[in-house]
Image (cartoon, rainbow, N blue to C red; front, top):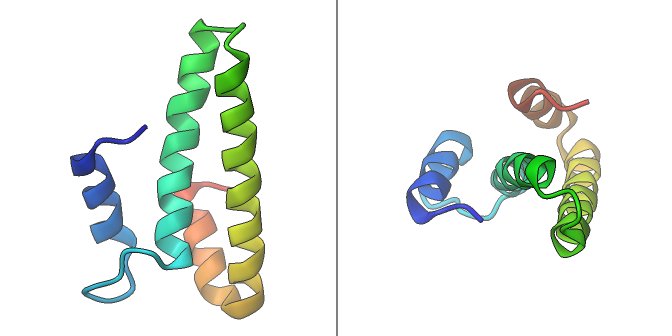
Length: 87
């Protein structure tokens, strides 16, 4: 789980306008950081199945948002995927 400072930093970096806190780009960036943290946690706690389930859920949610963004604004999606180093 991200703390408020880390989340605010991500929001400021990826927001599309001044009051943007929930656009697809911001949500994808936040989910990516949460996925990184959960992956790191699971490397040390291999039997933590509830966290593994949460990780899979976050990956699926991010995938849905990326697909949505590709449909709506392909150029922005490609830039975001490159910035976050996603496939």
